[in-house]
Each structure stands twice: as structure tokens, then as C-alpha cells.
Amino acid sequence: MKELEELEFSGYLASIQPKIRRGLIEYKLKVISMGGEERIFYLREPPTWLKHGVMIAVKALRSKQTREERWIIDELRIIKGKAELKFIPTMIEDITSGRFTIVYGRKGEKMFSLPIKDQELISKLLGKLPRKMYCMFMEHESELRLVEVIDEREYEVIMKVSKFLKEMNEKEAQNRRILRDFLKN
Image (cartoon, rainbow, N blue to C red; front, top):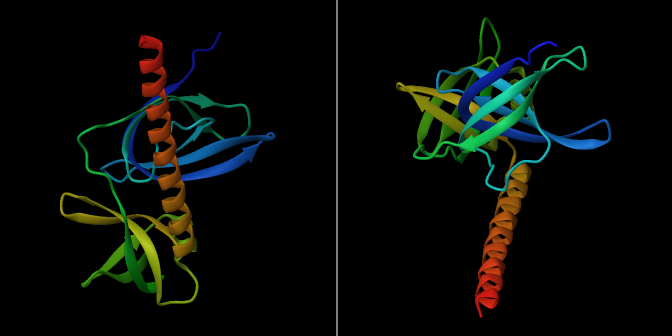
């Protein structure tokens, strides 16, 4: 019997995308290490604490059921003590293509110009410019990286879902306390 190939990886969760595969929902997670390495993982049931910008540690198994290589998450945990990355309102001014694709913009009062290699990010940025978007940046050793970009509508949806999950978790904790107190008496 062939031994399963395993991968351990840690980094910031840049995106979570629900997908339908063989009639079931799965989640495509893009994780970016502090060094800038990007990995894609798949997960069936995400924990309620999972959200954009958290630092996570992943243990995944390689799946070769199809032609494409897929890493299926076996274990997932949050890395505590690391600051979360947040979406920041950003004005994207321009994008230039050449040897490298460069995005120009403003976050707050500061201007930036950053090279981008990720074709998915580039496609999200293309369109009518300038425009307001929400960007997630990562700083490492004085280097600024653009990790993820979403439009205003996506940002609103993410914030509403996050609020709903937080309220749901609080209600669940409250119900557990009530039940525990009831069972004590």
C-alpha cells in the first residue's frame, strides 16, 4: 500500500471560496506564508473561527483522485499570538503590465506601488479605474505585499456573515451555560 503524502504549512488565510464538487460544498482556502509562498488547500467543513486574515497551521494530505493535485486539510488550527490581517479600504489608481504587473494605489494617505504575480488578484483588479476596493496587506521584513482584494459588495457580505457567526457562537455559548446550570439543579 502506498503511503500518503503529507504537507505541513502555516501562513495567513487570504481567501475562502465555497465551491461545488461532486454535488457537495467544499471550501478552497488560499494560505500565504510570511515568506510569500502561496498554497491552495481544500476543506469540507470549516470551523466557525475560520476567517480571512488569521494565521493558521495546516496539515494536509495529497489527493490524486483527479489529474490535478489537491491538498485536502486533515488538521487545521489557529496560531495564537499573531496579529490578524484586516481588509483596508484602498483606492486602486492604476495597473501597469510589462515585465512585472504593478498596482498603484492609496491606503489612507499613503501611496503604494506593488508588484503582483498572482493572476487571480490581477483579474480582480482589472476594470474601471480608479476605484475603491478592500485590500489585505501583509508586511514582512519591511516589505509590503498585497495578499487579497475584494470589492465593496464582497466586503459587506463578509462582514455580515462574520457578525452572524459571532452572534450564533455567543447564543450557543449562552445556551450551553443555561443548560449546564439547569442540569446542576
